[in-house]
Image (cartoon, one colour):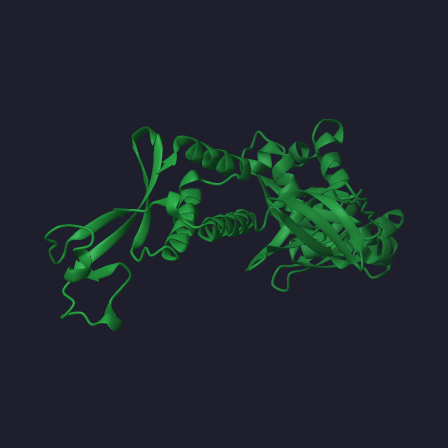
Amino acid sequence: MISKSFFESLEEVAFDRGLAIDDVLKRVEIAMAGAAKDNGYSGEVKIDLEEGKSRVRFFEYLYVIDGEEIPVEERTKGQITLEQAEAYTKSPKVGQTIKNEVDFSKFSQRSAQKFKNMFISGLKELEREYAYRHFHSKIGEIVTATIISNQNDFIGFDLGKNTISYMPIAEGLPEETYEIGESKKVYIIKVDQTTKGPKVYLSRKNKEIVRRLFEMNIPEVKDGTVEIVNLSRDPGNRSKVGVLSKDPNVDPKGACVGNSGFRVKTINMALNGEKIDIFTWKEDPKELVAEALLPAETVKVFVDEKEKSALAIVEDDQFSLAIGRNGQNVRLAAYAIGWKIDIKTVSVAKTEGLL
Protein backbone atom coordinates (compact mmCIF):
# COMPACT_ATOMS: atom_id res chain seq x y z
CA MET A 1 0.00 0.00 0.00
CA ILE A 2 1.22 3.50 -0.83
CA SER A 3 -0.09 6.69 0.79
CA LYS A 4 -2.33 9.36 -0.71
CA SER A 5 0.63 11.73 -0.97
CA PHE A 6 2.10 9.42 -3.61
CA PHE A 7 -0.97 9.91 -5.81
CA GLU A 8 -0.90 13.65 -5.21
CA SER A 9 2.74 13.69 -6.31
CA LEU A 10 1.74 11.88 -9.49
CA GLU A 11 -0.98 14.45 -10.14
CA GLU A 12 1.60 17.20 -9.78
CA VAL A 13 3.96 15.42 -12.18
CA ALA A 14 1.14 15.02 -14.71
CA PHE A 15 0.13 18.69 -14.44
CA ASP A 16 3.69 20.03 -14.72
CA ARG A 17 4.39 17.95 -17.82
CA GLY A 18 1.01 18.39 -19.47
CA LEU A 19 0.16 14.70 -19.24
CA ALA A 20 -3.10 12.92 -18.43
CA ILE A 21 -3.04 11.37 -14.94
CA ASP A 22 -4.42 8.09 -16.31
CA ASP A 23 -1.46 7.82 -18.70
CA VAL A 24 0.98 8.55 -15.86
CA LEU A 25 -0.68 5.88 -13.69
CA LYS A 26 -0.28 3.38 -16.53
CA ARG A 27 3.48 4.06 -16.55
CA VAL A 28 3.54 3.55 -12.78
CA GLU A 29 1.76 0.24 -13.31
CA ILE A 30 4.28 -0.87 -15.92
CA ALA A 31 7.22 0.12 -13.71
CA MET A 32 5.73 -1.72 -10.72
CA ALA A 33 5.19 -4.84 -12.83
CA GLY A 34 8.87 -4.83 -13.81
CA ALA A 35 10.06 -4.42 -10.24
CA ALA A 36 7.54 -6.93 -8.87
CA LYS A 37 8.77 -9.62 -11.24
CA ASP A 38 12.21 -9.43 -9.59
CA ASN A 39 10.53 -10.11 -6.27
CA GLY A 40 8.74 -13.29 -7.22
CA TYR A 41 5.47 -11.86 -8.50
CA SER A 42 4.52 -13.65 -11.71
CA GLY A 43 1.00 -12.38 -12.40
CA GLU A 44 -0.37 -9.32 -14.15
CA VAL A 45 0.25 -6.29 -11.93
CA LYS A 46 -2.47 -3.63 -11.87
CA ILE A 47 -2.90 -0.45 -9.88
CA ASP A 48 -5.84 -0.01 -7.54
CA LEU A 49 -6.99 3.41 -6.38
CA GLU A 50 -9.24 3.25 -3.37
CA GLU A 51 -12.25 5.54 -3.18
CA GLY A 52 -11.15 9.09 -2.57
CA LYS A 53 -7.66 8.08 -3.72
CA SER A 54 -6.64 7.85 -0.07
CA ARG A 55 -4.46 4.84 -0.80
CA VAL A 56 -2.68 3.47 -3.85
CA ARG A 57 -2.37 -0.31 -3.95
CA PHE A 58 -0.97 -2.79 -6.46
CA PHE A 59 -2.24 -6.30 -7.03
CA GLU A 60 -1.05 -9.19 -9.13
CA TYR A 61 -3.77 -11.17 -10.83
CA LEU A 62 -3.32 -14.93 -11.04
CA TYR A 63 -5.51 -17.20 -13.14
CA VAL A 64 -6.04 -20.81 -12.05
CA ILE A 65 -5.83 -23.36 -14.89
CA ASP A 66 -5.81 -27.09 -15.32
CA GLY A 67 -2.13 -27.85 -15.60
CA GLU A 68 -2.77 -31.07 -17.45
CA GLU A 69 -4.80 -29.37 -20.20
CA ILE A 70 -2.42 -26.45 -20.79
CA PRO A 71 1.26 -27.37 -21.08
CA VAL A 72 3.90 -25.03 -19.61
CA GLU A 73 5.04 -23.69 -22.97
CA GLU A 74 1.49 -22.58 -23.86
CA ARG A 75 0.69 -20.78 -20.62
CA THR A 76 0.28 -17.01 -20.59
CA LYS A 77 1.37 -14.54 -17.93
CA GLY A 78 -0.23 -15.11 -14.54
CA GLN A 79 -1.57 -18.61 -15.22
CA ILE A 80 -0.97 -21.02 -12.34
CA THR A 81 -2.03 -24.59 -11.62
CA LEU A 82 -4.37 -25.74 -8.86
CA GLU A 83 -1.37 -26.91 -6.88
CA GLN A 84 0.36 -23.52 -7.15
CA ALA A 85 -2.89 -21.72 -6.29
CA GLU A 86 -3.07 -23.46 -2.92
CA ALA A 87 -0.26 -21.17 -1.74
CA TYR A 88 -2.65 -18.23 -2.08
CA THR A 89 -6.10 -19.53 -1.18
CA LYS A 90 -7.91 -22.54 0.21
CA SER A 91 -9.72 -24.89 -2.16
CA PRO A 92 -8.92 -23.08 -5.40
CA LYS A 93 -10.91 -23.89 -8.53
CA VAL A 94 -10.01 -23.94 -12.22
CA GLY A 95 -11.07 -20.63 -13.76
CA GLN A 96 -10.69 -18.75 -10.51
CA THR A 97 -8.91 -15.37 -10.45
CA ILE A 98 -6.73 -14.73 -7.43
CA LYS A 99 -6.00 -11.13 -6.43
CA ASN A 100 -2.73 -10.95 -4.49
CA GLU A 101 -1.47 -7.61 -3.13
CA VAL A 102 2.06 -6.57 -4.05
CA ASP A 103 3.97 -5.58 -0.93
CA PHE A 104 6.23 -2.77 -2.10
CA SER A 105 7.72 -2.35 1.40
CA LYS A 106 9.47 -5.71 1.06
CA PHE A 107 11.17 -4.86 -2.21
CA SER A 108 14.95 -4.85 -2.21
CA GLN A 109 16.77 -1.57 -2.75
CA ARG A 110 17.71 -2.81 -6.20
CA SER A 111 14.04 -3.46 -7.07
CA ALA A 112 12.98 -0.09 -5.70
CA GLN A 113 15.62 1.57 -7.90
CA LYS A 114 14.42 -0.45 -10.88
CA PHE A 115 10.88 0.81 -10.28
CA LYS A 116 12.15 4.40 -10.16
CA ASN A 117 14.25 4.03 -13.30
CA MET A 118 11.46 2.36 -15.27
CA PHE A 119 8.98 5.02 -14.18
CA ILE A 120 11.27 7.90 -15.17
CA SER A 121 12.00 6.22 -18.50
CA GLY A 122 8.28 5.65 -19.02
CA LEU A 123 7.53 9.31 -18.33
CA LYS A 124 10.08 10.43 -20.90
CA GLU A 125 8.62 8.03 -23.45
CA LEU A 126 5.14 9.34 -22.65
CA GLU A 127 6.30 12.94 -23.12
CA ARG A 128 7.76 12.00 -26.51
CA GLU A 129 4.47 10.39 -27.52
CA TYR A 130 2.52 13.48 -26.43
CA ALA A 131 4.92 15.78 -28.27
CA TYR A 132 4.63 13.72 -31.44
CA ARG A 133 0.82 13.76 -31.34
CA HIS A 134 0.85 17.50 -30.63
CA PHE A 135 3.11 18.47 -33.51
CA HIS A 136 1.63 15.91 -35.90
CA SER A 137 -1.72 17.65 -35.37
CA LYS A 138 0.01 20.93 -36.33
CA ILE A 139 1.17 19.81 -39.78
CA GLY A 140 0.21 22.53 -42.24
CA GLU A 141 -0.03 25.12 -39.48
CA ILE A 142 2.13 27.90 -38.04
CA VAL A 143 3.78 27.80 -34.62
CA THR A 144 5.92 30.39 -32.88
CA ALA A 145 9.40 29.10 -32.06
CA THR A 146 12.46 30.53 -30.33
CA ILE A 147 15.86 30.53 -32.04
CA ILE A 148 18.49 28.71 -29.97
CA SER A 149 21.30 28.27 -32.51
CA ASN A 150 22.49 29.42 -35.91
CA GLN A 151 25.33 27.41 -37.38
CA ASN A 152 26.34 24.99 -40.14
CA ASP A 153 23.52 26.13 -42.42
CA PHE A 154 20.86 25.14 -39.89
CA ILE A 155 18.72 27.28 -37.59
CA GLY A 156 17.86 25.62 -34.28
CA PHE A 157 14.35 26.31 -33.01
CA ASP A 158 12.90 25.48 -29.60
CA LEU A 159 9.29 24.48 -30.28
CA GLY A 160 8.39 23.73 -26.68
CA LYS A 161 7.40 20.31 -25.30
CA ASN A 162 11.12 19.42 -25.09
CA THR A 163 11.31 19.50 -28.88
CA ILE A 164 14.12 21.09 -30.90
CA SER A 165 13.99 21.39 -34.69
CA TYR A 166 16.83 22.34 -37.02
CA MET A 167 15.55 24.18 -40.08
CA PRO A 168 17.88 24.25 -43.11
CA ILE A 169 18.83 27.82 -43.94
CA ALA A 170 17.51 27.07 -47.44
CA GLU A 171 14.01 26.92 -45.93
CA GLY A 172 14.44 30.43 -44.56
CA LEU A 173 13.96 33.76 -46.31
CA PRO A 174 16.67 35.50 -48.34
CA GLU A 175 18.71 38.02 -46.34
CA GLU A 176 16.77 37.22 -43.16
CA THR A 177 18.78 37.30 -39.94
CA TYR A 178 18.34 34.80 -37.10
CA GLU A 179 19.28 36.10 -33.68
CA ILE A 180 19.56 33.79 -30.66
CA GLY A 181 16.54 34.27 -28.41
CA GLU A 182 14.42 35.80 -31.19
CA SER A 183 10.96 34.35 -31.91
CA LYS A 184 9.84 33.48 -35.43
CA LYS A 185 6.68 32.10 -36.93
CA VAL A 186 7.46 28.86 -38.74
CA TYR A 187 5.38 26.51 -40.87
CA ILE A 188 5.32 22.79 -40.06
CA ILE A 189 5.77 20.75 -43.24
CA LYS A 190 5.79 17.25 -41.73
CA VAL A 191 6.57 15.35 -38.54
CA ASP A 192 8.34 12.00 -38.15
CA GLN A 193 8.24 9.84 -35.04
CA THR A 194 11.66 8.73 -33.76
CA THR A 195 12.94 7.03 -30.62
CA LYS A 196 14.35 10.39 -29.50
CA GLY A 197 11.06 12.21 -29.97
CA PRO A 198 9.31 13.93 -32.89
CA LYS A 199 11.38 15.19 -35.80
CA VAL A 200 9.64 18.35 -36.96
CA TYR A 201 10.36 19.77 -40.41
CA LEU A 202 10.02 23.56 -40.60
CA SER A 203 9.90 26.19 -43.33
CA ARG A 204 9.50 29.93 -43.71
CA LYS A 205 9.58 29.89 -47.51
CA ASN A 206 6.65 27.53 -48.10
CA LYS A 207 3.86 29.56 -49.72
CA GLU A 208 1.24 28.11 -47.37
CA ILE A 209 2.71 30.11 -44.49
CA VAL A 210 1.18 33.17 -46.20
CA ARG A 211 -2.26 31.56 -46.23
CA ARG A 212 -1.99 30.62 -42.54
CA LEU A 213 -0.89 34.15 -41.61
CA PHE A 214 -3.96 35.53 -43.34
CA GLU A 215 -6.12 33.12 -41.33
CA MET A 216 -4.39 34.15 -38.10
CA ASN A 217 -4.66 37.90 -38.65
CA ILE A 218 -7.84 38.39 -40.67
CA PRO A 219 -11.09 37.27 -38.99
CA GLU A 220 -13.01 37.26 -42.27
CA VAL A 221 -10.54 34.77 -43.74
CA LYS A 222 -10.57 32.62 -40.61
CA ASP A 223 -14.37 32.37 -40.52
CA GLY A 224 -14.66 31.74 -44.26
CA THR A 225 -16.36 35.00 -45.23
CA VAL A 226 -13.34 35.82 -47.39
CA GLU A 227 -11.72 32.98 -49.33
CA ILE A 228 -8.13 32.85 -50.53
CA VAL A 229 -8.72 31.35 -53.97
CA ASN A 230 -5.04 31.03 -54.80
CA LEU A 231 -1.68 32.61 -54.15
CA SER A 232 1.83 32.69 -55.55
CA ARG A 233 5.05 33.60 -53.83
CA ASP A 234 8.64 34.66 -54.31
CA PRO A 235 9.75 33.94 -50.72
CA GLY A 236 11.08 36.96 -48.87
CA ASN A 237 10.34 39.31 -51.74
CA ARG A 238 6.70 39.27 -52.80
CA SER A 239 3.45 37.34 -52.68
CA LYS A 240 0.26 37.74 -54.70
CA VAL A 241 -2.95 36.67 -53.02
CA GLY A 242 -6.28 36.38 -54.83
CA VAL A 243 -9.30 36.79 -52.54
CA LEU A 244 -13.04 36.38 -53.00
CA SER A 245 -15.88 37.43 -50.69
CA LYS A 246 -18.84 35.15 -50.01
CA ASP A 247 -20.72 38.09 -48.52
CA PRO A 248 -21.74 40.86 -50.96
CA ASN A 249 -21.44 43.37 -48.12
CA VAL A 250 -17.79 42.55 -47.46
CA ASP A 251 -15.01 43.92 -49.66
CA PRO A 252 -12.46 41.05 -49.69
CA LYS A 253 -9.45 43.19 -50.49
CA GLY A 254 -10.40 45.85 -47.95
CA ALA A 255 -10.94 43.24 -45.25
CA CYS A 256 -7.46 41.83 -45.84
CA VAL A 257 -5.71 45.18 -45.99
CA GLY A 258 -7.42 46.51 -42.84
CA ASN A 259 -7.61 50.05 -41.50
CA SER A 260 -4.52 51.99 -42.60
CA GLY A 261 -3.14 48.72 -43.92
CA PHE A 262 -2.69 47.37 -40.38
CA ARG A 263 -3.64 43.77 -41.13
CA VAL A 264 -1.48 43.29 -44.18
CA LYS A 265 1.41 45.12 -42.46
CA THR A 266 1.26 42.58 -39.63
CA ILE A 267 1.68 39.77 -42.17
CA ASN A 268 4.39 41.74 -43.95
CA MET A 269 6.35 42.10 -40.70
CA ALA A 270 6.00 38.39 -39.87
CA LEU A 271 7.67 37.60 -43.20
CA ASN A 272 10.66 39.92 -42.77
CA GLY A 273 9.18 42.74 -44.84
CA GLU A 274 7.94 40.63 -47.73
CA LYS A 275 5.60 42.67 -49.97
CA ILE A 276 2.04 41.35 -50.13
CA ASP A 277 -0.11 42.13 -53.19
CA ILE A 278 -3.80 41.44 -52.61
CA PHE A 279 -6.17 41.35 -55.56
CA THR A 280 -9.88 40.62 -55.91
CA TRP A 281 -10.66 37.37 -57.69
CA LYS A 282 -12.98 37.89 -60.66
CA GLU A 283 -15.10 35.44 -62.66
CA ASP A 284 -14.47 37.33 -65.88
CA PRO A 285 -11.02 36.27 -67.20
CA LYS A 286 -10.20 39.74 -68.53
CA GLU A 287 -10.98 41.35 -65.20
CA LEU A 288 -9.08 38.61 -63.37
CA VAL A 289 -5.92 39.19 -65.42
CA ALA A 290 -6.17 42.94 -64.86
CA GLU A 291 -6.58 42.46 -61.10
CA ALA A 292 -3.67 40.03 -60.88
CA LEU A 293 -1.33 42.49 -62.60
CA LEU A 294 -1.95 45.25 -60.07
CA PRO A 295 -0.42 47.59 -59.06
CA ALA A 296 0.12 48.04 -62.81
CA GLU A 297 -2.92 49.48 -64.60
CA THR A 298 -4.06 47.74 -67.79
CA VAL A 299 -5.69 49.43 -70.79
CA LYS A 300 -7.11 46.31 -72.39
CA VAL A 301 -6.86 42.54 -72.01
CA PHE A 302 -7.23 39.91 -74.74
CA VAL A 303 -7.85 36.33 -73.60
CA ASP A 304 -7.89 32.86 -75.11
CA GLU A 305 -9.98 30.92 -72.63
CA LYS A 306 -9.28 27.58 -74.30
CA GLU A 307 -5.53 28.00 -74.00
CA LYS A 308 -5.82 30.00 -70.75
CA SER A 309 -3.50 32.65 -72.15
CA ALA A 310 -3.84 36.42 -72.07
CA LEU A 311 -2.31 39.52 -73.58
CA ALA A 312 -2.45 42.61 -71.40
CA ILE A 313 -1.99 46.06 -72.92
CA VAL A 314 -0.56 48.74 -70.63
CA GLU A 315 0.48 52.37 -71.03
CA ASP A 316 4.12 52.77 -71.93
CA ASP A 317 4.97 54.18 -68.50
CA GLN A 318 3.30 51.17 -66.84
CA PHE A 319 5.30 48.52 -68.71
CA SER A 320 8.14 48.18 -66.20
CA LEU A 321 5.67 48.03 -63.32
CA ALA A 322 3.58 45.38 -65.09
CA ILE A 323 6.62 43.22 -65.78
CA GLY A 324 8.26 43.84 -62.44
CA ARG A 325 11.90 43.39 -61.45
CA ASN A 326 13.25 40.34 -63.28
CA GLY A 327 9.70 39.64 -64.48
CA GLN A 328 8.46 39.12 -60.92
CA ASN A 329 5.08 40.85 -61.16
CA VAL A 330 3.84 39.18 -64.33
CA ARG A 331 5.29 35.83 -63.27
CA LEU A 332 3.56 35.86 -59.89
CA ALA A 333 0.32 37.06 -61.50
CA ALA A 334 0.42 34.17 -63.97
CA TYR A 335 1.11 31.59 -61.23
CA ALA A 336 -1.61 33.03 -59.00
CA ILE A 337 -4.41 32.72 -61.57
CA GLY A 338 -3.04 29.80 -63.58
CA TRP A 339 -2.85 31.67 -66.89
CA LYS A 340 -0.05 32.50 -69.30
CA ILE A 341 0.24 36.31 -69.49
CA ASP A 342 2.08 38.43 -72.05
CA ILE A 343 2.49 42.21 -71.72
CA LYS A 344 2.63 44.81 -74.48
CA THR A 345 2.66 48.61 -74.41
CA VAL A 346 0.03 50.77 -76.04
CA SER A 347 2.64 51.95 -78.57
CA VAL A 348 3.49 48.41 -79.66
CA ALA A 349 -0.17 47.36 -79.68
CA LYS A 350 -1.04 50.23 -82.01
CA THR A 351 1.74 49.39 -84.46
CA GLU A 352 0.49 45.80 -84.51
CA GLY A 353 -3.09 46.91 -85.08
CA LEU A 354 -4.35 45.63 -81.75
CA LEU A 355 -5.74 49.03 -80.74
